[in-house]
Length: 246
Image 1: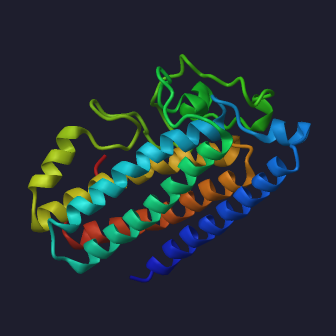
Image 2: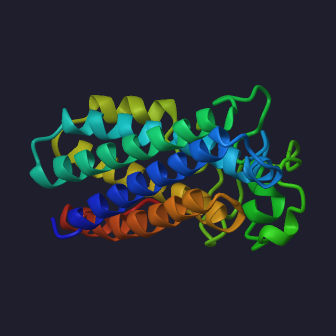
Image 3: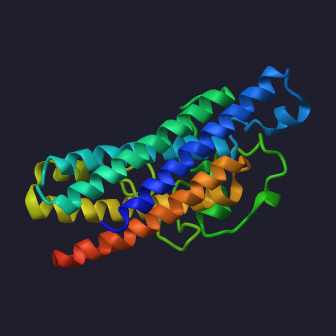
C-alpha cells in the first residue's frame, strides 16, 4: 500500500515529539517550576485536556473496529489498513493519556459533555482561534451540544447510541462483528470513513484551539494522515462496488 509509509511516519514523528515534550516538562518540574511553566499546564476543561480525553475514546473504538475486521476477512488490503490504523491510533492514544497523567488531570470527567471543549461556535463550523479563549483553564462549555457541522463542513452529528461524531453505534459494531468477507470489508470501510471524518473535525479543532505545541502538531498529523486514508478507503470501496455512506 503506497500510503502506509506516510501513516507510520506520522505516528513515529508524533511519538518523538511527545517524548521531547515530556522531557521538557520534566526538566521544568525538576527545576522547581516557574509561573510561566504553571500557566503552560492545561486546565481541567481546556481544549488541550478535552481533546486528549475525547480523542482517546474516539481512537479506542477505531482500534477495536480494526481488530474486529481483521478476524472477519482474509483480504490483505483491508487487513493491512486495519493493522495500520490500530497500530497508529493505539500509539497516539497512549501519548494523549500520558499527557493527561503528566498534567495531573483525570482521564474522565463526570458530567462533561463530549466535545464541549470545542465550544458551540467550533462545533457549528466556527473558526475561533486562541483569541476566543483568554483563560486557558476556564473553558467549560458545559451547555455545548455534542454534534453539529464540524470545522471542515462535515456533518459531525453523533448518531443515536454513539458517543461522539463519527463513532459507530453498538448496533453497528454488532453487525460488523457478525459480518464476513466482502460484507465485513465494505461495512468496515464505511464505518471507518465516518469515524475518520469525525476525527478530522475534532483534530482540526485542536490544531486551532490547543495551546500545547506538541499536541497541536499531533492533531495536525492526525488530520493529514486520516485525510490520506479517507481517499484510500474511498478507492477501496469503489473497487468493491460500494461507496461511503451519506
